[in-house]
Image (cartoon, rainbow, N blue to C red; front, top):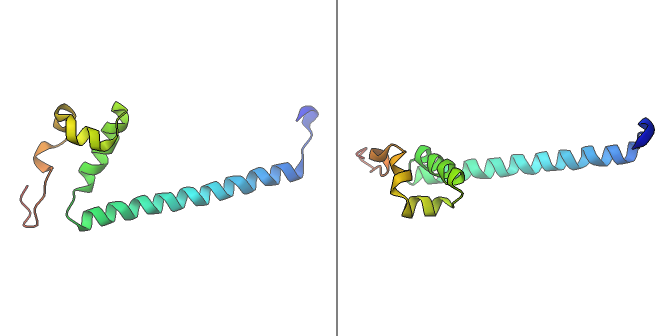
Length: 90
């Protein structure tokens, strides 16, 4: 777009695309929240789950690989809280 010309239709299309992507982003964010809520309702510690995901991203591995094969990474998290039982024991 040289000389300061503005194509109104093209600009409107950019805003339409951005609006649609923001809606999709919110939907995905809501879905992620739902998954964590479901995990919590089944007794999982979602704070630990989030930390495992964060560390896995830092290490460039899927969370399952971090959980299953990397005790050093797991030690970076509150190791006493991996498993929470229904009676509140860890």
